[in-house]
Image 1 (cartoon, rainbow, N blue to C red):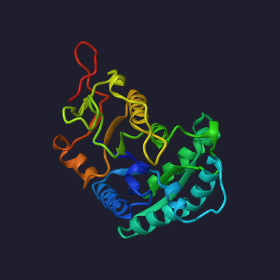
Image 2 (image 1 turned 90 degrees about the horizontal axis):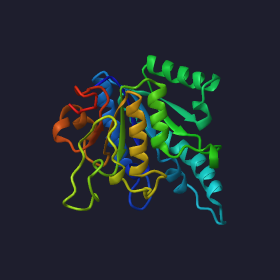
Image 3 (image 1 turned 180 degrees about the vertical axis):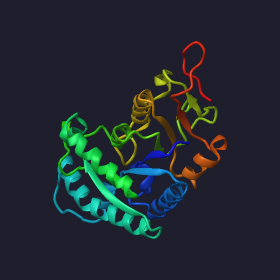
Image 4 (image 1 turned 45 degrees about the horizontal axis):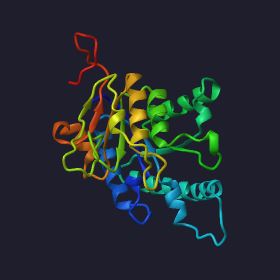
Length: 267
């Protein structure tokens, strides 16, 4: 697998059933990212979890609308989230830097170039960028659809080789994931339409869902970046994707290999 990887970790991976941050899983993912860096991979982490962190920090005794809740809890939670990442990565001697961004920063122009230059100099100096949407100011039409969309834009901005979307299921199935007859679609050739297998539904704690991941994966793979959807709740999932890919459940959107007829095929 190629050397620059964007890893997106969703809220359903980072939170427990009660909505609290799952620090144990967060620590395990940090361990795996540290392993990737030791193997020579450049890693950019797009992490959800700020709102979940903030919601547990403060009990509000009056009603807040959805925008106020998002702004308040993300402002509180982002501090806690990046602090936890700082402490966990420091155990491996890894420096981290925070990048808070907005959708308008991905329009061609000075802001786009500034953000790209910032992340480029971080990588050049062995600093791991941790990216999240700036929820304190990104509301309504200014918001990303979710962090799946954000991670796809980051992967394209930074010329990544691979984008890994960590969800709470193993990949895209050819039926309902709970149906024992359903099977994972292991490899998606370029141009393949899987919309018949995708339901428009959101995750329990985040704004995304498999429809969002499929949309992002389709767009990003068309841009020449390999995309993997896998289960972030599986032990050592990132290491297994690198070392035991054939035995590890996942869906991969391939990009490079072409058949003689011009259609994409999977290797």
